[in-house]
Length: 329
Image (tube, rainbow, N blue to C red; front, side, top):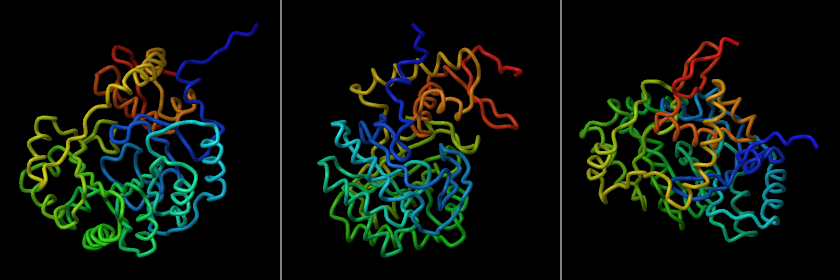
């Protein structure tokens, strides 16, 4: 009998039959989240210094059907009919989902075929477009982002497409709040030494108060960021800054206990691979059949625990286990 060469992670996460769905993956906000990827890597209206997916390779505000809606729905139909479970179905993935001209059709399908809530993860930059707002308002939860307080800080933190203005971002989020029947959550991403003075955060908090989100969550770099200088903010400082918001913001915590066992299994499999040799993110994704978002969650946890580290080389970033050295191959 031929030996079966696989790992627990590969068996559990083998999603090669899905082109647009990934997971369910553990999420610090949404528990077990089934991801729906609607744009090619990395198509976005921002090029954030802290993005876990790396630099934006296609910065655009052009909206079109980047992937076929009928094929996404076919994958969702198969997944739902299989009896699989998730806490949320999340439009996220390899870029900005609101760039897809028909993302609202995906939300409609979710609502008509399952009781699982639909979440839209967006940077909020295109919400000044009425069509984007109409489609976004269909979601049960819309998570927007606000990590700047004026045009200069927006340019430094988010490096937006030249057609995007700070004023339009604020106005678009306000207008969505007026039309949204579901929950509006706001993420404020903090980078140590960049937008973390009391004055900076108070200015962000003032803008947030005019948008009236249902929940404000503070986040920082827990996964390998786009730029090395996008340093994580210490947790005690995050909690102090949370009090500058009205109401007090929530600091994004570690995964809940219910998810920790499966996460640990996944981390161990990746760690064992990196102990044998340094690997790129693509190596890890291909080896275990993972979406980039999935792999980065595990790599981020391993890095926070100081079990692995990142090596920047001319041909890309590699990850290696502590105590190991890069292969010369």
